Length: 194
Image: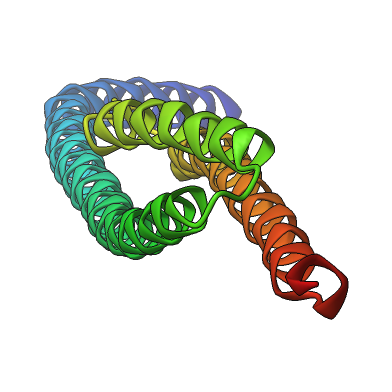
């Protein structure tokens, strides 16, 4: 009897092993299929993620280009405004210089000494032509840099140079007027009339 149980036990074990290996072989393709499906989903998700990254990079590049274009436009408008202001200042100084030269001619016609005033007026004329040239180059300044700070620094430097020349013109005109006043006062003084 023990042999029967032993044979029955061995037979059942063998049958279970055979059946389990058959089921296992059936399950393996199912597991393999699930693993392949998961890998396909992961690959698809990776592809979507990469497409999204590429889209984000394109948007970022587009927005950067728009920002740079906007900053360059602001710089161009600033250059145009400063150029317009400087040209108006130069025109006003030219009108003042014309009036000073007229005054110099009148004082000289009355017999006054105007060499110092003429020298200051001539210096102012030279500086006026220099500042006109500087403003011309300022108006055509290169603003193609991607960095706004560089563009505005170029504008600042060029404007500062022109501003210094304008200050020099103003000083020359003031000195011409002062020397004319002293000549006019000397010419109008009562001691000269006697």
